[in-house]
Amino acid sequence: MKTTILLFLCIVFARGLTGQSRSYFSNDTLDQVVYFGAQYGNENYFLVRAGDFDHQPSAPLLIDTEGYVHSLISLDSTFQLSDSIVFEKHDGYYFNPFKLVFINDTIFVAGSAIREDGSDMQIFISSYTRNLQLIGYSMFGDSSKIEIMSDIKLNNRGHFIVPAKILSQNLDSSYFAFFEISKTNELIYRAEDPSWTNLGGPIVLQLPESKLYHFIDEAYVSIYDSMFLHQATIFPEFHNWFAFMYRSALFAQDKYFVGGIMSNVVGKKPEDKLEIQEDYIDITYYLVDSWSNSVDSGFLYLPDTLDFCGGMDCLPDGSLCYGGIHNALIDFDKPHFAEVDKWIVVNNTNYLTQTDNWFFRYGGDANYDMYGLYLTTKNECIVYSTRYDWQHNTKRERDILIMKIDSTGLLVGDNNQIAKTQFCLVYPNPGYNELNIKSYNFDGIFEMYNLQGVRVLSNSTSNSTTLINTSFLDPGVYLYRILDANKEIMLAGKWMKK
Image 1 (tube, one colour):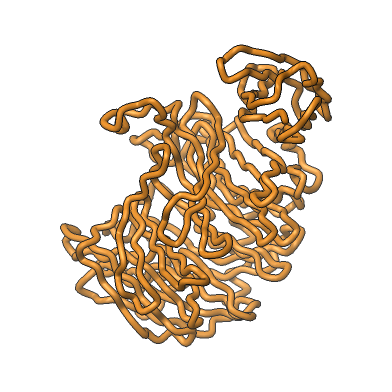
Image 2: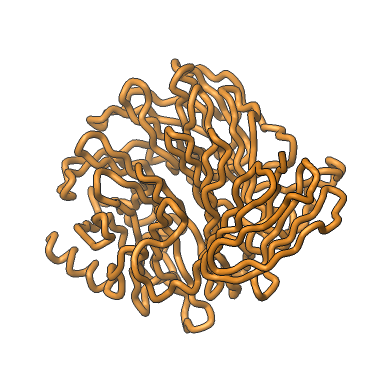
């Protein structure tokens, strides 16, 4: 069976796995998505699915199930295919994986178990060896309800915490619940909160010192103590309007980063917040404490477009990596398949030293969508995404794109698509009488403005490092932007002269 599965995947992913820097898993007829990735040892593991997007399922719960094959693949350190396995039916249920966790040399996968007639959805957890041999599986739920899991994390007792949205069979009511499950797949505890009709599916964190659980659901944070007693459900009111919290990453001392999108509404009335225009939406992070109070924030300012957060990760040394999609226009008639060019954008900084490492941009030739990213111990950023070539496709199908960005912001390895990649860096920041513009793969213009909006500096940049004299500027804060030859804003931010 495993030989057959591997052969199938080699056919499905035939055009990829040829370079270190990026991998397309492509097929001319199959729509493909990668929706979770993580590294363990020298291997990179991804949960993927491939099938026919236009297939009409026989029941609503079978969307993304009928007509699709769900798989777990592993890539080695050079991003060559190492192993793969297809998730098969068990006990009359399809297994659609969603996230995975590593414990020692065991891989635990959690997702949705959907009855093949589309009448029920529960939660499953299955375990595998490093070489993807099935160890066992269990399902959790009630056949009279629909359980939709959204995350899986380990708590301080070494058990899994799995948050879920619970719906009635007729879909007319919903509420929040979470499960505590042992590593041997035994249900230890189940908690429900019918008062919290959450918007989507929460992500979960347990803070290392207080042991508080934070369940983060787009616009709300629900806090429980270590004994699962509810403490608060809050809507964080940050200093700008911050909405739709998609990603999180533990930092230190019971603080964590949460990432999403921000509408910069300084000077606008509260009642105007629902009328935010697209050019206000930026990729944002907040650092919050154990009660979800804002400690600090930052954002990726790409003016004049709608930008969505797609991934976030951090390392113990303070390295913070976050990014998403630039020009993330949505066509509600064709979700995921808008006929517009988009870019993958990623920012890497060291939060502890307040040092910008690099800004990376890729694309502009197709519709890209980021599903996540993670950092390696070498501060390499692995981005997993999809690419829809809307200008040349005759049907709706996406290709999987996985990229490795090194610690300087460059794609690793030789690559014939390098023209789609740009990155730039302004340093030192703060500085004194000069600053450097390090840019790759484009020539452009560097402009600097004072806080009154007066341009005080304009300088051309080259495809390397450009030194700019700032000795004539007074100490203070300045705004800058870098434009390419087409006047597209590549990067914008603040620079401080001491």
